[in-house]
Length: 117
Image (cartoon, rainbow, N blue to C red; front, side):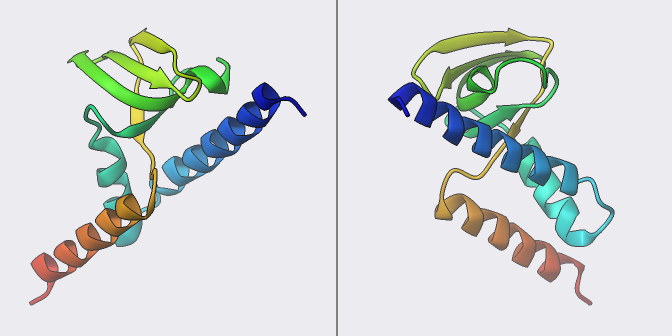
């Protein structure tokens, strides 16, 4: 397996996991709502997945958000290092590491404190 093939396998796995997390975040439970809110909070520097054009190559849809120039214009750096600009697209944040998972956990803790009597 070439390095390019290995990268493609990893990107496909990241995209599939990110997509499943995004779909699961639409459930009407408190935990899902917390994840949904976190995933919608996209900003430069975040690891992201483009979710509106699922037929496009996954290598083009996963990467680091570089810029948001309007409500639907974005620039990302893909896993293979290319910069791609997108228009009329939607991106969601996906966990890159343990720190992102911790941030989601802390958001849940904060929400629990705010809603408890």
